[in-house]
Length: 231
Image (cartoon, rainbow, N blue to C red):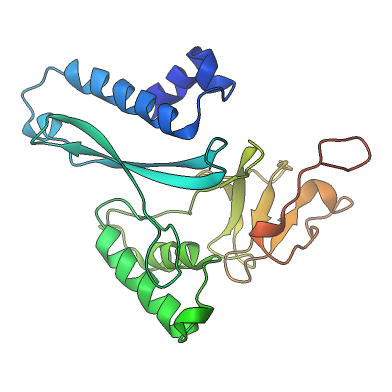
């Protein structure tokens, strides 16, 4: 993933978002395949890597959000990308990756069907996060997952940012940004998610306190482009 980030920085069409999402995913797959082709090792696991990646974003050509899953195919001896199709029952696009993927999917569908018994009322808000949150809280030292969740938000007007999260909860935890606990003297310029109420606070917009400015949900963040606050 670090090499992909470096490849994006070194490739102006990717950095300036000239590439739409689909050609960018194609570029990412080519980067991965060029790297796997350069690997020379006697370790069997390195020759047949059991890895998967998720790349999601907004397609400015198709005017909609899309999610791609990139997995290594042992039969084809290369990475391949697959577009995620909307799930049935009006759930939309939801993807889990990793070795606990199947367990996460079962928990997700159970949560959605319990919360929204009527198919016509089903929608997706923060249910995928709630599933990951509960799995991380229940994980032990010998599990393959653990630590604080790492969050990012992508908007359709080509703005993306990371979010911090109070972990393990707001009362006993501290803000954790992309897996790193924020130091006590740091005031991060990021929205911070309460993992239980799913409300957001911001240390810079709270008049010198950690109380923050509350928003109803993570989906209601607005970013202003103009000096008068207009977009």
